[in-house]
Length: 192
Image 1 (cartoon, one colour):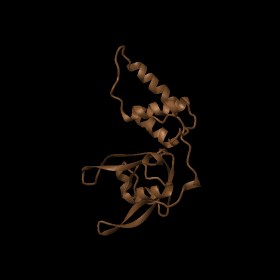
Image 2 (cartoon, rainbow, N blue to C red):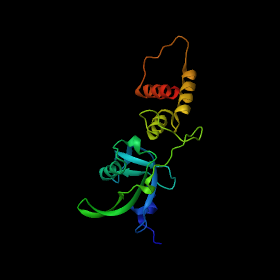
Image 3 (tube, rainbow, N blue to C red):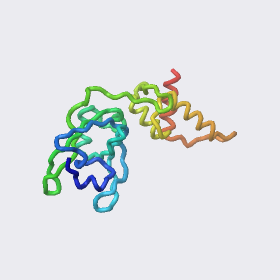
Image 4 (tube, rainbow, N blue to C red):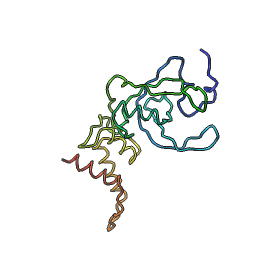
């Protein structure tokens, strides 16, 4: 099989070069976030980047077209709700910069027609939704807060351990964040 010249540069992100002619790749979204990406001009730009659970897939910089397609497929524009969802990608010829170029595009299909279960990184159980919160939302909020996907119960244990470790006698904490409020809500819902 011939080698595309871009493969020799080992870029950090998934691109058209990574696909064989006619090949499709399916990945499970781990998380999506805005992060700085180094452009070909050497300048950093904040971009929306999709990270996959499959270690064989590099992250994909999402353009507006691909964000709209994921929104359409899963009927939600909220990136937190995309975690655990699968997308199939292919290379398409698109007009850009006054020329026709190869670009990675998300196909308008739901791979397998189902959402992949997210497992807690501490206890290994499938993460469940809580009240108005989807399993993906719970997993992502706990990832933001604790650095790993946790179920409600393990998130509660982690918060209690952190509270205990940082507690000083006689100190009252007034600087609660939105994440603290969410953690408190998830813990309260879990106790009901």
